[in-house]
Length: 509
Ligand code: DUC
Ligand code: ZN
Ligand code: ZN
Ligand code: ZN
Image (tube, rainbow, N blue to C red; front, side, top):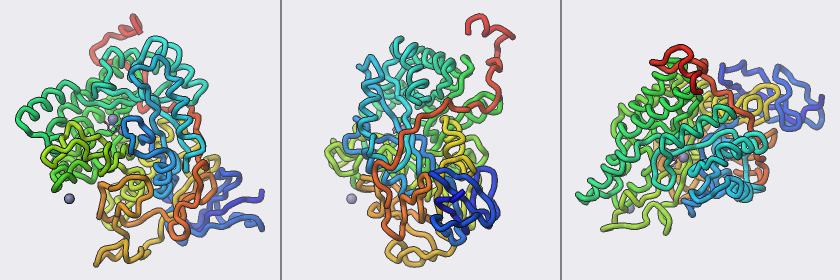
């Protein structure tokens, strides 16, 4: 067979191990077709030399917000996915969202297809956000989403007035999800706790950005997380708790996993790298760090989340890229009071689609890694792919998979002087000006990373070449991915919830 592309001289990392550096990757028609020593070169075969660097699977970012109506100045498909490939991500799962008044999901679905078609730099799929789960939607349309549209996951909110669902609505959706093999993602925070604290803070005039964190304590997240897990346990369905920020919530996930329940957790770089003190930055800059759940207060809080990444509690590490510009009529600083934004009015969410992979890779390499390289691959690519029905296609470097990979710089590479600070020997500093998505700031401004993707390869094509041309792929290179049902069983479904007799659930489930 005449190969289109051979990747040589790379140290390939998979979810399982770091491979022998002599192993090459052979690509034909966008797929990895073989791996081994001394693959046959033919006249038409291009050779990409990794020069001794690590090669990891293209990132699978399973939680990004693009072209959402609530963020009119956020990223659209083109700008968001441009940032994705520049940061080593080749697949994104973004949200199509139902508005409360929609009686059918299909107009919204068409709308999102319209916004993304021929616009994406990387491959992509949709999760559906359900905010008005009518019986027709739950009993009829969800099946069509799974069987015809390749959309096999939904996100449900337990907080935010315009989005939140009560426990009964969540249970009804979980019943359908159980039958259809849908993965249910849950934003878990206790809405009433947050409402009460917010009112009390406002009565006292405590409204600047920092109080956002005070208004959404760890207990609010932990209570809702435990409730979501209990609803899933009752019905014997898999569940994924998104953007977990606190040890209290994580401990409930860990405990459920110990009982072999198919309960998954997701966390994000900002819960590993940033603290609530960011919201106390001078002037209005604190608004740039407002996200939900909020950044937590103490170094021990982030240390706990790192432990959860290292010990496997978290299945996925996604960006939760949810940008609004800092300086814009819709942005972080709308509605200033005495020169400070009022936390209730600050859009929630941080940009991070481009920085996720470099930040995490830096913490998997270097002199004091926090996670191993295989774990880096697991949480940034392999496990989200499998969880969301892209197993065998995305998130791994092995024959049969799409030829999506990241070639990093070999050790000791000196980045350009203007990207470093005095005294930095290796690596570079993140600056908003070097980022490719469409946002006027990054919460990681000035943060050091040890490496950056040198090449990003999507289905055998170089779409990012940092030294020669930057984003060299075109919008429209990315394809919509119809996904299979996820294989999201961590333990054994069919186990009994605690406190029930044998066969008791058969009486009603
Ligand atoms: N939930 C998200 O998933 N992203 C940003 C803000 C939020 O509440
Ligand atoms: Zn959320
Ligand atoms: Zn300032
Ligand atoms: Zn999100």
